[in-house]
Picture 1 (cartoon, rainbow, N blue to C red):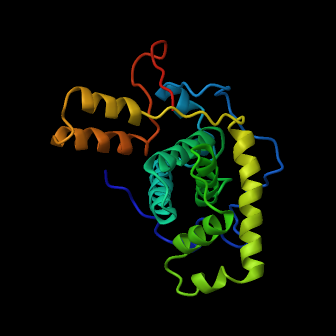
Picture 2: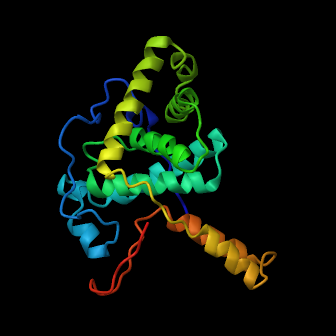
Length: 228
């Protein structure tokens, strides 16, 4: 799957005085989706707070860009693929109940990776999370590496992540349960003895690519449900 990169990192992610910084103390906007993670495509589209805020076709691009960021971020942090997948799921869930127009996606993605590390028992130090995230977001800025090492800048970014952590937890209703398809996929590969077959790689890629979109069943709403 072709994942588009963020075009201008200076306007996305954890940035000083960002116009997209969320007033995290406000009431969580959950729309009409309720407390479940089972939705039809119709429910997702009709209740998208981002679309209500004027973000329509661009929503797909924003989703792909934070998935690309998380994949790169996770590799730099040297966490397992399952941790990256969990971070992606957390991010998808967050933006089901919040708007892209009011929440910076790369800030939220950074928080989701920090949380995913804890949930999957592959935690990374907050300092590493802050430094590496900042460097990736500002990769076009040669001065970024030196700037984030300044105490004032670092402390500001650290505080933003800690505030964001509370916002993500509240938005997700403290539901950290994620059921990934990796284990049953591995079992199926072993059962059918196709570990060395190209089919196994195709299946693995399909699972990873599927996490980068809102997975929903395009069948009648009464029959449509999928769990992230």
